[in-house]
Image (tube, rainbow, N blue to C red; front, side, top):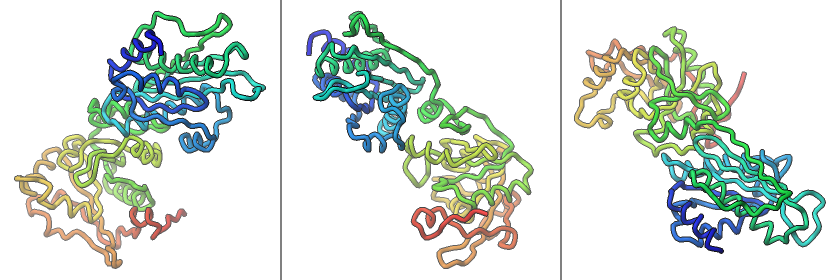
Length: 382
């Protein structure tokens, strides 16, 4: 490792941007160089050599049409970026994908080439080159690929590299930028109070009032959720939304990739909102003049004093009412199949007008996300 690369890697480590690296076909020299200079823990979160096609399939979820292509490198970088966001939430993460075919112990019919992509919260930038076949041995081609990987990491940090890449006169580095802000990442970092899922892993910041909102973990979304929101809308005449709080009063904060997976269940008919409002007192402030749709279990938790510290349940409900919000409550069956319905007397007298409680004849759906996950129930579609 020469002084030039040592200096470059030192500059890369000096600007912490946690990175997950996925590489296939070449790139191990870049990983070695990053680790050879002190401070690599500020740069590298995780690195995986996807040498077997089945390993790359497990990363992407499919077999790419062309293993060495810009599209494959971008898909690898995006997957790496999402993994980085799981490992280090709320920071300026990078995902680096490298796919290459270089000289080996047999003659290859096609070109020797590499594509490298770096994904972060601002989009994806890719770097590709077709190598002059036969002008270098395997180590020489590995050195070119690894140099471009370091170049991509430096470029993401705004580091100006004065020394040229080790390319011949016939070789040209193709660079393509695809800017696209990752609103989910900035939301998780606290930049937005609420975002709406618009499909294709995209989110937009929103402000909302006067809606009918069904909150839940949606693991998975099922026909009972859909029927419940549809039933509530017939009474409220408001636009309908699902809402997922990434922060939960009883559970850990949801990882980035889990949020993406759950978001894909929702269509534009009744969109999904993301918030960091685990309790209804926070939801009411975020979504004034709204109706919150509750199942029996959630209604019981709403009326449980343990979630409110020194405040009384009545005081919390009064605060929710000051935001113009109310509740639409339905019952559900317990483990023995007995239907449980919220007793109006469990609600403080001064707040009962905030609650509309449907009886069993008006709404009953015996379906459970937990039972669907464990296989005790199966979803039926009509």
